[in-house]
Length: 88
Image (cartoon, rainbow, N blue to C red; front, side, top):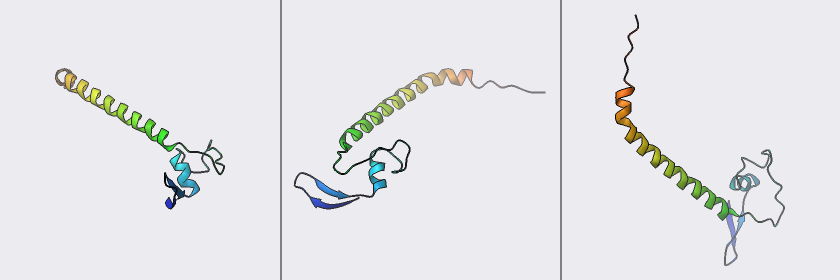
């Protein structure tokens, strides 16, 4: 993607079709269910990044909770899990 102009409040960009499709969440312009993008259509990139940010924060919170649960369960796991079985 290349900036080819300045509008004062934004930029005019030059991008390959695949770059644009990557930006909106598709592998390429040939991906199944990829939309048709006519000249002049608006792509709300900020909304996609807000969603990604919220998902990232939720993942971090879940990882934190999982780590705390593991730490709380570790003493029990140390007692229960190390069962030795001797096979004859």
